[in-house]
Length: 509
Image (tube, rainbow, N blue to C red; front, top):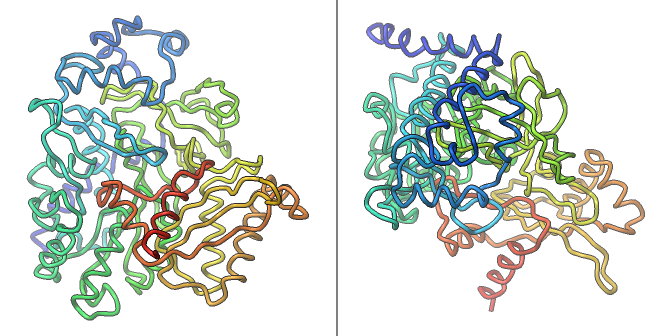
């Protein structure tokens, strides 16, 4: 449509910021560091720890400790009560609630006006501009609507002064009116608190708009449930029968690796493009800025000052972080952020690895607590995902969800890893699937291979095939359906595994 040409040009304009970051990310990082100090020095937290404008970085490192959520929570609690100028200037009116992936306790991450403006929405505009620029002659994105699966929000239980919800709900509630023209379904449906009520309502609404749908932005886990519902209602075999103009998937929150084969079946066309985003409750940190690559460009000009702790130092209890200028390609780091949301040297919990420095591109490789190291094997999430993918490809299996925990050494019992897997399509040969999973892990991880030698310290994996909808029912029992909630992948303790096995056993009885 010719009349849309000026709009395409206008929405591509922010791509200049991405070009700037590809050439120089250090200058904006220094600028944001100065801005954060200037604002932070006026807060109650800043005054308590001695922040001041123009504080040298080495002094900043000494005055401000690296801290996980639990350490920062007493200050966040004061903002939840409505106190002003605690971690950031003014009163915080929105909080992103996250159950996390390592425990069941809710986390409340402050979402300030500036974090919406300079971080989440600025990065979203830049993502949009990047897609429109990369596929300038092949896209019709502005001629349709993008599905966005929101979570729920409600008045905070601490008072009417603040609202909370999962990140997607907060963003949808604050989204500029212009961008609402390009999304579906209606906001009142997307923000229904109950996933079980929302799913059929979404399906009905989207089927009425099916020829307008051109893309999706969401977590793969919940997208799959929506797709299955739509296929069932339409009696269709692929999602392209449901949405014939579909062209883009913007995905994040969980690794896409286990879902690749499944999405290829949903959308059997090379015209459907995939872009990964790294948008956590704590901030929009990175997104894929080049086609045919999973490397994510760090959002260095988006209200966040980044630091990185070498993972080996983190494991040893030395939280000595370095700024972006100090990182090295190939090393794994725990991510630390200071942001316009009032997070000060906050340990996000994710681990990343840089694949290049100019431009600063990285990959998410796991969680600081989201790995298995029960026997010195140090299996990271990226290795588990790669092994699972290899086993699935070789045995024509498809996985909906999974979790892994160790079986500890005991009397007459070797150690092992227990994989609880809910298959969409079970492997043709489970024994072969297990062998391939094990062999791939041994190839990828020398520590795991050493522990597996001779089956002495670590036996072969134990695969437990779960009934359909097991993880759905488990998440429901936790009150964690929809939004960015997800199944914990790896854990060194057996809490999740035992809960799920007990639930399956109770259902069988």
